[in-house]
Length: 173
Image (tube, rainbow, N blue to C red; front, side, top):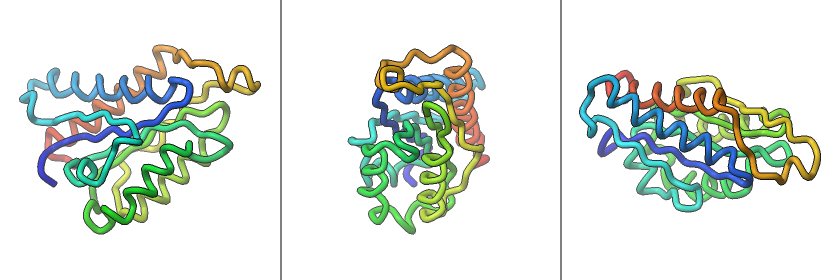
C-alpha cells in the first residue's frame, strides 16, 4: 500500500450507480476537509470499472464498489473488473477495508452477495453492510430509462464515502 487512497470502482448502465459513486466521492472528499485534515491525508479516486486495474487496486488503501444489479447478479462490466483483477491482486490486498453500493430495480441482494464472495476471496474487511438502492424499476421501459435518484439516496452514498475516508484519515482502517 503506497498511500491512503480510497478507490471507488463503479459501473452504471442507466446512471444510478454513477450518481451514487460520484456522491460517495464527494462525501469522501468533504469529510477530509470538514475534519480539518490535510487535503493529502486521503486521496479519492473514482474510476470506471473498465479502467480500474491492478496498479490502482494495489495502490489503494480501501475500496468502494458501486454497481447495478442486472438479472439478479452484477453487471457484466463490473464482473469483468473483478475477473480481470482477481488473481493479479490476490494475497496482496488482504485486510483492506471495503464497502459496496448496489443499484437495483427491486432486490439487489444477488449482486451484493457476489461482491461479498469476491471480497472474501481477497480477504478484504467489510466496514458496512451492503447499501442497496432500490429504484423500483419493474417494466422494460422503467428498467432501461435513465435514472434520477432522490437526494436521500445520494446523501446515504455520500455518508458511506465520508465514513471510509474518515476511517482512512484517522488510521482506523
